[in-house]
Length: 274
Length: 282
Image 1: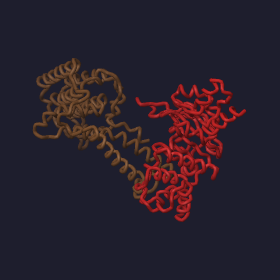
Image 2 (image 1 turned 90 degrees about the vertical axis):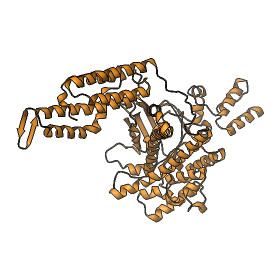
Image 3 (image 1 turned 90 degrees about the horizontal axis):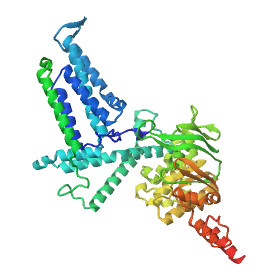
Image 4 (image 1 turned 180 degrees about the vertical axis):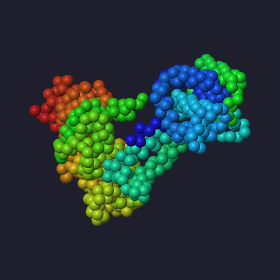
């Protein structure tokens, strides 16, 4: 039932990518996304493919999962491809049919756009597949730490994020339990018209809210009991620390970014579409 | 109205990284009117097992028969089955949602399509059966004590007049007095109505006093199945899987080992006391 939904889509495995510092993964993903936009040529996409391929291999996440992650953007992808295919003018006309014209550059742009979009999603999903939501928030907190100077409550925001993430599976499980308990009492959630169905949700929502408030209260109590007083002067049990592999990852990604920049600068700059 | 399980297997999240084989080839028959205890460690599959009994989860393979009919057949009336096999979940008080006690207990009968007066009659009968005082019928269920909330929740299932009552850890989180009261009430209910009662617990002491048959679950498999006497005679094996026989079993075995002429298969304190008295006088 509800429990089958995976949130944060973390894929547990032991790989070189999993063991990287979350900050490295966030920054390198950002670099990868940038690299897709500073060039627009065959050699550039070939380099991106090689880079992405190696990362996927190293991460031990089955390709099946990554392809599944592309599903939600299929509509957007199709829309972009069709728009670019018919609306981009320039180069030789390949097909002319009634009011539709497909030109050489239209074909090029649409194909490259599709690849770019797919790589964007695949690249960022690799990050979420290999990083637990909690270490991701840790990484974000550490990266945004300088913003504290301009009075952005970075720690509080990060704490709220990790609590929210922590509660998603708990509340899902709770919903599952309550649904089952009410089903056992003969409740029916699947039949009836819209109003009847909305009404049928009351026996789930009321207990769910009650339990969410109870849990929030308990958690606040437990945090207070352990003297939580916000981020000031707070140390960590497992502070984020860069290791050799993290520096290596930075170096490799920066090198890749430089290569992409060079490709973008010197190869077929005329196809730049932004 | 017997329940029969044949080669039931259940696998959670099949085909993902979180796959878990929760039930392995379970074969079981529970005749009408029996008082059965299911015992096992956390994660032994007992909660998964009982959710099969009213079709809340469907076995990955294998069949569940109720009253001789497979409940997985096309067009089987699941709603009716759920009225007949009443399942009380762990911490059932978290499923209360209505404005007052009596309306909440009416929820089950109402879903069965009974008219209003009938619902209320059943609700009153059920609340009476679990010993819930009438003066609180109009109170909000959220203002009651833990033990009372649990009574209301159990009454919510009983009001559907089930033929089989399944209770998942009905005493979890209650103080000793509340625990004894609830268990006594359930035993009383079994005697009064003749319904099948299936009691899930991880406390041997709780179960030994009431049930006539114990099923021991371990890692998704049925490990032992028999009368309390038979099951507790395997107390060494029980210990190996992290369960313990009631303390009297240990006392009696110890006494026997040290040369007292007692028979070690007493399961309750009363039986043990009688046995010791008998051996001293005789």
